[in-house]
Length: 100
Figure 1 (cartoon, rainbow, N blue to C red):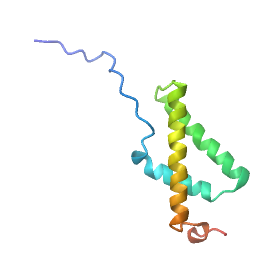
Figure 2: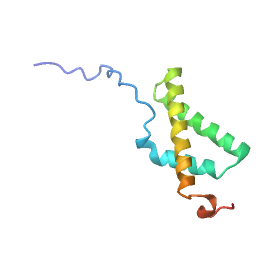
Figure 3: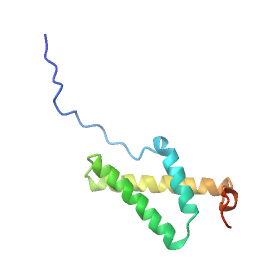
Figure 4: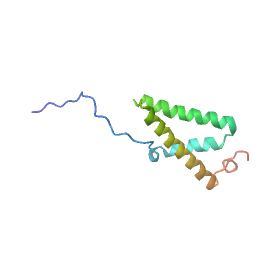
C-alpha cells in the first residue's frame, strides 16, 4: 500500500492572464463607474481599481512584477473595450438616470 503525500506543497499552477471571461461583471461595473465620472474623479477611481487588483494578486501569492504589469494591462484593455461597448450600445448616463 502506498502512502499519500497529502501535506506536500501543491505544484505551481501555470500563469493565467487576466481572466476576462470570469470577471465580466466586475469589468462591466468598473466601466460603468468610470463612465459616470469625469476628470480627476475618474482618474482617482481608476487608480483605486488598479490598486485593488494589484493587491488581490499579491495576496494570491503573485510577486512577479512583470506578471502583475501584464495582468493590469489585460485589465485595462478589458475595461476600455467594455467602456466602448457601453457607449456604442447607448448605455449612457442619461439612460441610467444621470445627468448628461
